[in-house]
Length: 142
Image 1: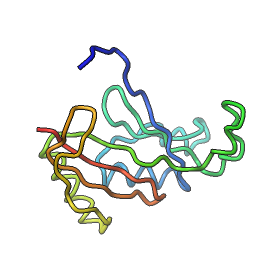
Image 2 (image 1 turned 90 degrees about the horizontal axis):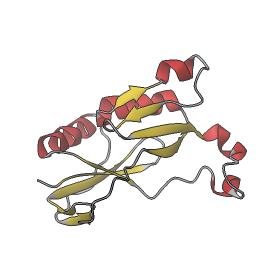
Image 3 (image 1 turned 135 degrees about the vertical axis):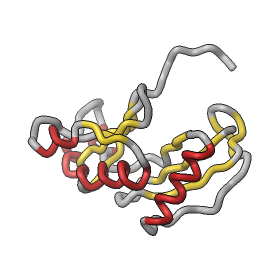
Image 4 (image 1 turned 90 degrees about the vertical axis):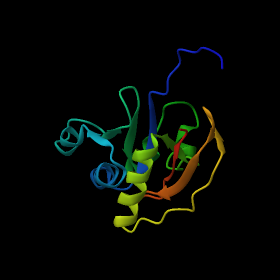
């Protein structure tokens, strides 16, 4: 594999209710909430959840989608979710995540084997949706 210093910093997901989305990602997925208090106090435009030391998922309020002006034409694509976000984790964390989702009655897909990803074929993977319809894949390689 090519040596590369580029890292994924963040992914932005459109959500109807950012605080509820942060709570889902904390309680069901096990991700640490970031800036929820600041968002609630009106001091931050959106909260996030931490995937690891280098990567967060921003939970952008869908209500601001029409105001998106990052690049020409951005407003036309604002509010459309990404296809899916994949979270790679160790095997025990994978099993714990699936258990938390099932406890909360979050529908999960069947487990797939050997799906290709950034580190080659994953031993196991499955998909689930958050309350805003964003699709996540969970996988482990070892």
